[in-house]
Length: 258
Image: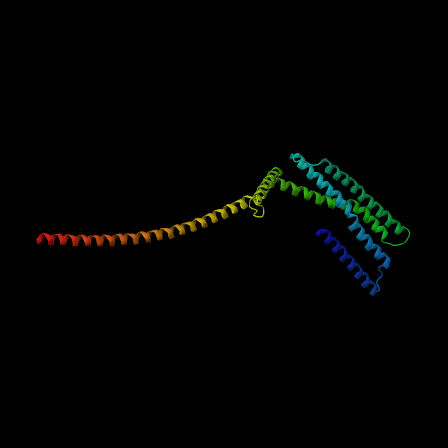
């Protein structure tokens, strides 16, 4: 997408520059052909460097897909036969479409020159025929670069390792999904929800035990207090009994002395 935008911007800039040059030459009254010649030249430039490159790009893109599919098949990675057949059909169709466009373009430009419509027709038709071979060579260069980059990538990161790593990542992703389900509090049957319920239950039990402990402490304190008062009463009673016995003993001693 970025390359397409750059190519369109480049063609537009060249078009503006050519029109400016034509205007300057006309202003200086320099013989530079008619406006029709320049317009046809610009259209031919757009056509030959823009439109006719599309089938070549599609042809070599399909060839790259076929090479990648063959590499995957050699590594034991399953590739759909329908995809390979589709890429083969596209490669052949766009190859013939590209050649057809160049031949038709050369013929139309030649006829424009032959019937005197424009003098640039002969040169443009020759350019169209030349680009029939130049454009594939340029695209072939890109294709070879892509293949070399693929080979280097294969050496650094073998597809078997990448496939194994992908399988491990899928396994890890599955485990993460399971963990997310286990830790999902919005799902009542999840492990986290059950743990939360058990924690709430234990918290309530601890609260009840604390209340029961406080009640037992208070009851124990009251019983100790009652026991202390009873002990004091018993001690006081024993003191009174001891005092009474002392008085009896003194009385007996007095009687004996008398």
